[in-house]
Image 1: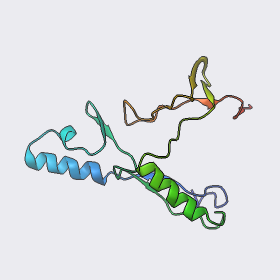
Image 2: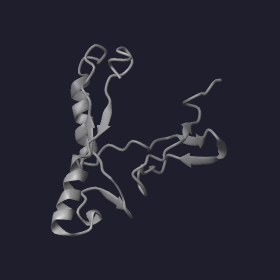
Image 3: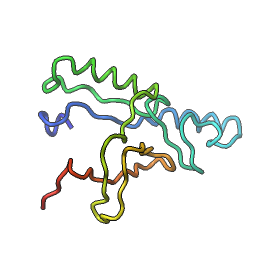
Length: 134
């Protein structure tokens, strides 16, 4: 993103498939089910993982726009994500599906992303926080 919009993105994330590939190869060698060797979340034959599982990595920090101390904050946040102290989808907010206003989620109860699949499912727009104008 930094190459395309150098003043817009401070940091990014990427999926690291190495833990899955290594587990899959190990399973084939040992003639066991891949799903039984995965370090992460398995839902049927769908799998995913987190920072703690090694499946998520950060991209380089865009130092051109990062605030002073930004790298320390980023590293502390990543450590908190890895050990379960940082929760993303929780707070004093209500989210609404932009295509179905009756589909809402009260974030006073944490929303667990990728709880039942590796595909992200959080599709809510935070009421009174985000305004969509066409």
